[in-house]
Length: 265
Image 1 (tube, helix red, strand yellow):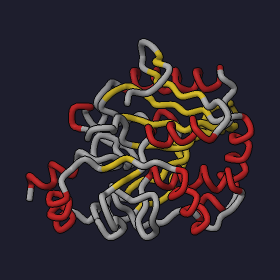
Image 2: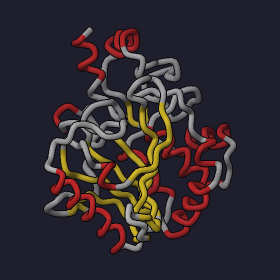
Image 3: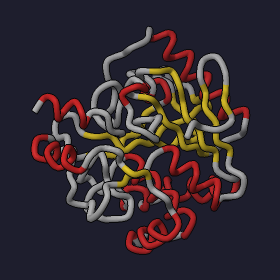
Image 4: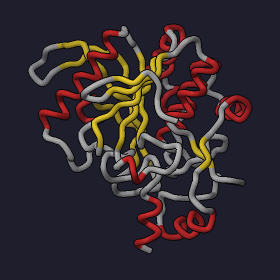
């Protein structure tokens, strides 16, 4: 059983090391995390981003499955943030789908800030997608509306299939919100039809037998929404989708030392 659990912990959006849960044990000094979070905010502000899709690395890169380089994806929204002493300052609020610590097969929507988002990462690296100005405005409206919560399915699976209903993870919710903004609808069946037609998912590169056995022992893993070869959404597949169907989105990686203009494939 421990061996199987270890295999499953390789997937995106899993607990521990700031996967798709809030918090996590800090792997870097607080000052370094704060400095990196501020660096990310400055990069977004310099590009006048009202909404960006951001990703973090919650597990050591060598433990991540083929084709997956990030473990959690969220929206960063430019906001007026009230400090503890009552001041209002410009900054970014982060809108997350977080897996429950107490009930691993469920999730909730939580708003926090970049320093919280990066608090328990295994690597100081951020994946960034800045959509076109038009899509950013549409996303602002969608995130501020009841649609954002209506599109949340609290039944969590780390390998949720983005084409089906019944299970959801952080990347699928992000994708659903993006398509709600693109198509101007909260009709989840219309959204899923569009995703089946246009979105190319990531194959989960773990043997079917291991997945089937793992689903018996880990409530956060299920194949109930996977009618065929298991697939999921990732930061990379969302970036590819927007590169194809949005107008010149910016996709890049931020580290404490440098930027790379496109994520690894």
